[in-house]
Length: 347
Image (tube, rainbow, N blue to C red):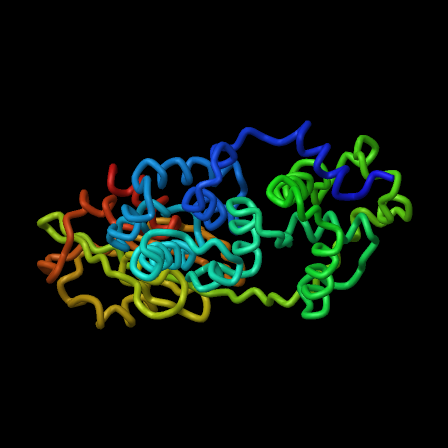
């Protein structure tokens, strides 16, 4: 009888995509691809992977880079803590492990930003460690094939699926098997409209037999969206300077740059904005304030929606610590700011 793992391996041999990191088992390359692809689609991640490999071809190059250059290269991918963890982990590999990635699952877990999935992926792909991967694609394949309705983001579900994955994996072909089941979930057993009739597993897939394909996997909705209202003050003095600041603290966009911002509990008008500007500028020297976008830009993050308005503030004041407008494009910024700069700096 052909096992589940054997079917996955056969399918993978016939259908795997030619991805740039599939031509190597170098742990630096595999680690870099895995960190980039966390919460990022492959089509979006490939250009970033190629840019990082070209700019930082070795872990030594990445470790020696400035955080600002790493964040700038990462710009547009979102979830910037990944980039900071990437940089910190590179330094750990160089300083603690003499430039060599740990070859065990447990050793890899010591690196910043490396959890169960990433440690399993790197150790199995690079070093043939028989450790099963469980990512979003794998959860979906297993939940459907075995008809499991235990929520995948519950403590019980996480433990159950990891145990199941270990039980059915092909330990002897773990490198290809782990990549195969993830690939299967990505292009065959897709979240929406999977092509079940041409699936090599459909004859024994519980979800297909019971008509539950689109209802599995089950996930508890724990996320409550928070709405925040950002008002960016885009100052412009007569010498062509503006104010630009690095965002500190542990919130969103840590260490990225942005214009001074007034955050409110709801959308505000010009009069309210002026009353709150004292901490940023001498209001008496402001010539004009123009609302740049009439309709707030809604920037959606995983747990937050940012309702954003840019205000152009022309002032006679010489801005202390001001930055030449043309230099703003050199700074690492959130994609929300980058989109604004692409238009405003050239206008």
